[in-house]
Structures are given as structure tokens and as C-alpha cells.
Image 1 (tube, rainbow, N blue to C red):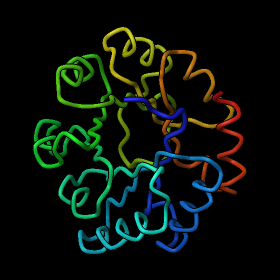
Image 2: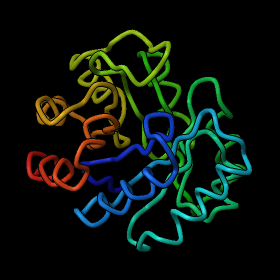
Image 3: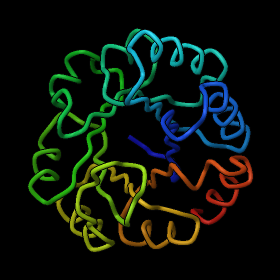
Amino acid sequence: MHLPRLYAILDLGLLPTFAALRACALELSGSGVTLMQYRAKNTSPRDSLAHARELRRILPPEVRLVMNDRADLCVAAGFDGVHVGQDDLSPLGARTVVGEGRIVGVSTHNVDQVRLADAAPVDYIAIGPVFTTSTKVKPDPVVGLEGVRTARALTSKPIVAIGGITRANCRSVIDAGADSVAVISDLLNAPAHSAETFLRLLL
């Protein structure tokens, strides 16, 4: 699959309300972001589904939406794909739930996980954290740019780099071999301006 350079993560845990997340998504879409992931680790499935359906309703069809963790909610909300972590449903399980027509992505944090992901029915492999990140309570060890280079050498599948990526370092991540960068915190302050800057830097 072709990945856009910028992959926006909409993390409800970092925003005061869903209304704020909704507004952020609209700003990002208006600035040219075409791939977004909805993440809500501490929200009930009922509320997550309601939020997801609202995002699908308000965003144009060219914006691909990915559900974090929950393959079942991905299907129920009409999302374009699901992203699973190492402790979630397996990539094969996710593929079984969402079918062949939707995106499946998986998080990896080391060489062994990248190798397993390469053999799994996934469309892209996320590697990280590339840099120190504050968006996870117990982050995995930092892999650095060398981790991105190593992942690139191990797979021909698209690579999404994640973890501590900002406008100041995003270009170095692409130069290390990533196809796309997943960004969370550095899109929250003035989302439209931030996204436009990222997209310009990532050309």
C-alpha cells in the first residue's frame, strides 16, 4: 500500500474532550492530512464506537481512518483499517476480523518483532519509539534512527516510524528509511499550521 508521509494519531488521552479531538481532526483534514488513527485507551467501547462513527461522518472519504487496537470497532464504524500492538489481537486475528479490503498495521519495537511482522498479513509495520516519547506511560526502549534503518533492511513493507517525532527531526526519520511518520504531540498545538509545516518538510 502507499502511505502518505504524515500519519496523524488522534489520542483522546491527550485532549480534554472528544469535541477537541473532533476539531483537531477537521483542522488536520483541511490542511491535507489523509491518514489518521483514532486512539482511546481509556474509553469504553460504546463511546469509542460513537466517536469513531462521528469522525467517519465529518471527514471526507479521502481521509483514511484507522482504529487503534479494536478490529471489531473498526468494522462497526466503517473505518479503513486497524492498528494493533504487541499485546493486542494478533495481526492474523485482526486480518480475520476486518477482511482483505481493510488496512492492518502492527507496532514493533525490535528486530525479532519486525521479522515476525514481515511474515504476517499486515499492510505496514510501525517501528519505535524512534526518539524519547511522553505519550506512553511505559514506553519501549528507544530504537533511534538506527532502528529505522535496521527495520528498512528487514522488510519491503511500508514502514511507519513513531515515537517523539517532531517538525525538528521528522526529515531525518524519512532519510533513515521510513515511508511515513506517525505524529501525536507535535500536531496538537495549532493543528492546521503544524500539519502544513510537517507536509512541507516531508516532501
